[in-house]
Length: 640
Image (cartoon, rainbow, N blue to C red; front, top):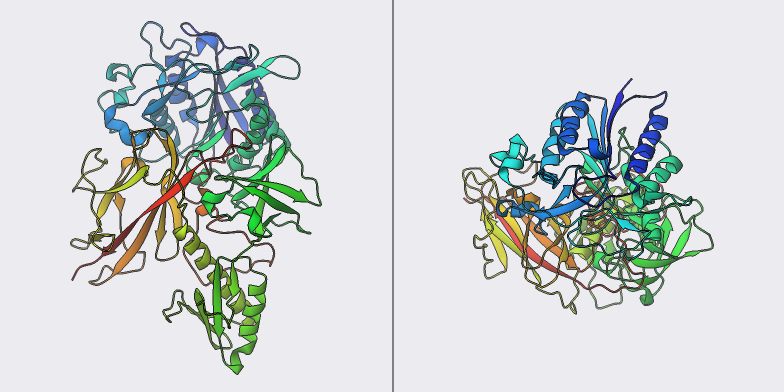
């Protein structure tokens, strides 16, 4: 039987900062939920630290000596309810904090007699040591990560935040970091549920009985109870997020950490695959989806635009009535959704297809061609080109035999492996290939020509010197050639490495996502999956680590070999989800699936394998946000 090792911290009473009222209750409620959840299936080993006992030293000791007892098959959980704060990031760690501030947990004795807060980089080191034992590591933080004074004016509402503290001094840090930052973990091995964004406040308010409680913890515990033990972190966070945003403004719970853990059940288990990357949810008296213009969704006034609940039979539809920058308002059609749930949805109807295709075949191949034509009639993304139109088709389908199909450019260049098989299966995989390419091209072409944010954030490709591990802040960027391409070359069979910087030249914080579109028709957001970049500040891809521009797997580094990458920046005034952009490599051997509503994969329905989804909803239901794009083209080749 596995064991859940839990470190439970709840602090209402502080030595040097203002008190809170609901943290002990939240911590006790979380522990009670853990006891129920593990009863009969796991052993629970808990360590509780409340109020003045939850000192910085005691919390560090609990992380080092209690949670590190967890081994393979076990789970280690750190729960913290109390004040959160921020501190300036040391200059040498600029690449880790695009907003120029680090987050801290305020311990019971923090800021008393020189005791500092627990810095987020210290927590990362401690959690990484826990994960080294092979256990599943989860973190739940119900505290503010803010950088300003209290916004709330209601005396019954209290924010779990205190003013920013000073930058950490070397002598006050953990021994692992006191001599420098070389021991910071290179990758995250835990999953974290946080009460709010790093710039927001976690509220505590009276519950139905008038008892002060953390809004996030109450919502999280309700989600765990209602969704059951099979619910994943992503599902639990989504449910809790709806409840929090329905109750308070400017508090959006976040899911972050190791991407592969997001789709595991809470406290660990087998990974599941979400039905869709697009979610319909109820926020402040309206239904919305977390996809908008910046994801490529067209205006709702251009014709019929609908989504359907993924996998539902019969299909439960919702009409898109208003498309905003980062989200869209929808109206369910003929059914009443449960306002406490989130629904995975996919696009079922678009006013215009993303691409057109023509088809050529001989009499012997008519069955395959007919099956392809029939499926294209139901595709929202690709339509048959009008043979009488002077406008050239975007793609060309050539049926060379009863079970042999080639997908080409209009000029005849093949863009995918030959597709073979019996007519029905061959047709299905052909249409899937066409849709995949159409969706990739849509993201590549995505732009907002009327945006006032054009040029506000610059993509900078910087050469990485031999042995260099961290991005330089001031080194000049590489310049594209006359064709607008940055050209990189292998040296002695070694792929070139660069750093990618994002420089915000505007006077406002801007949310940025960096997409890598490859010539294998893949899109991923692993370079910079989404964060605000402060005015006049820079962010770094891969948290400042070198980016290796290598040939695809299976392609030998022989003279003349090359690969292209389109590095696309999407920048907006408001946070948006990166998951809907994700698209895997083009592969004609698509597994068989039921024919139903298709999602706008790569724009709307692909699972984000690189970055953990941060659902985003507008703070004000009718707010308008600007967005823009920029792109850098890179060609990597092996010289003769």
